Figure (spheres, rainbow, N blue to C red):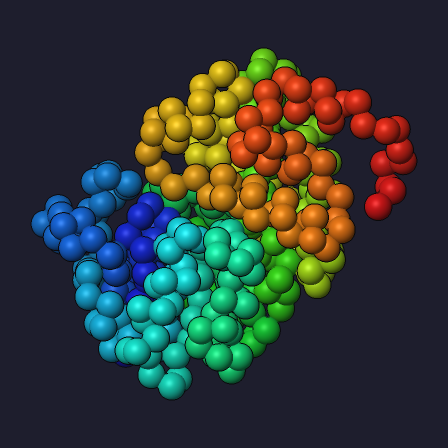
Length: 334
């Protein structure tokens, strides 16, 4: 008998994960909130907008009806943007069985209150709901193309992490498990802010030295915040921390990096958003990360400058000068 999983979110990442699970001989239901979009996926048997030319496996089904999701499987994998995460859970709640398990591949903080997403799940569905997060250095089109990839699945319930890993892993998709659900989430969220910073630097015409410095000092910021929130340091130097940070800061498949490039080249935030025309998680995450860091007293100078560029109209070149002119200090100082 096939395993079953329902994936929520018919964008590029949700579609790629649904394709992966179905290829792995798992009965898979992909849900999207837009009935017209889902109808087009059914007709074309592919996601022509986000993953053109990748044909859906036979075990992949589609729906725009939220009630069908929980009826299909008690294992749900949410891959909607962070701003839609809370509402998706609220809409799901009336339909969920008592044995529901919730995993997510969304990277970011809850946009209402800055909570980590596992806290949002606890607040809406209760603290006893098994939860897991899937994160790591992944571009959707490479996963859909079967290119070698490695990710981390973190859960306080290691048996749940292993169940999800069994569904997802194959010879080209390696899965590591972790119990550090906080650290894995922090790495996956904050790396998008730092990718914007790297893009801005490259857009300004700075070189590889600058990019390497931003990545390295950016990792320090992830570690500071993650440790303060209760994460474990090994997560920040693993796939969901350093691995995802390198990927997102250095490759133009990253929407956050491309957004930063446009800002560094002098384009407005609105123009850059319209040109990319897909979700750019780092924009809202920059604000939430800045506010969380201020609230708990964590120093995050790169994040602060990105926030000021995006929300206080600071000139990008001034942001760079502000970073370079900071007080001299030891590299290992916290």
